[in-house]
Image (tube, rainbow, N blue to C red; front, side):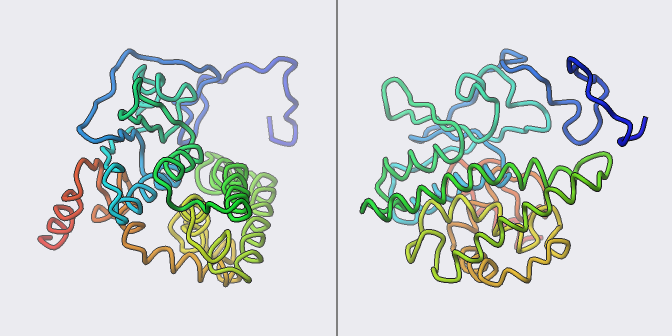
Length: 288
């Protein structure tokens, strides 16, 4: 049966032989699939994640806080291999019942505080430590406008455009056209905003930039989906300017490689348990 002949069944049933990158992992049910405890480290914050754009948001935020000498933001970054189903183990599900990375455990509270959803983690850390979220009501509101914009928009970029353009086992013209249209519209939204502002929410670097850069900054710089040319990313000059400036921040350079398991091996730090782990990574790169 061709796509043009497809008609939805009266009641949907799962196809056990679904193909694609995530075909063997996704299921229509939630909850743990195995009983496995999570590892714990020595630092106040325990992060369970992988270096996807959503994971990078949090490690960049933590590295930015540490760059400001916020020592209580020290963290252990434990790798959750989502391609192998680590997110469905009971220990992880206890922290995030939605089985998505990243998930954070703040062990300085009694009981420990779980925080899941990347936007919620950024907001939690900004409020806890008092950085990267303006204190004046207007600036705070504008920053949160863009944080929530990202949380609502990124699924169209990742699960929509990224999936059908880069990962789907079958190239479906309608789906690619539909989500390319939306990805370009979102880039235009950002480009217009950045035409009059240095950063996303104004003249100050905030959690809005930290949230949006791993998705849209990386997209226009050709770092995700290998789609910069396809999307004519060079047309969004204000986004390009902003993306390049953020990319040069030392904390961003560190944060984007934490829990990363793909790409150039020199840009992979599978787990981070001490600041010296970056130095060891640099020494290893220079030795090669």
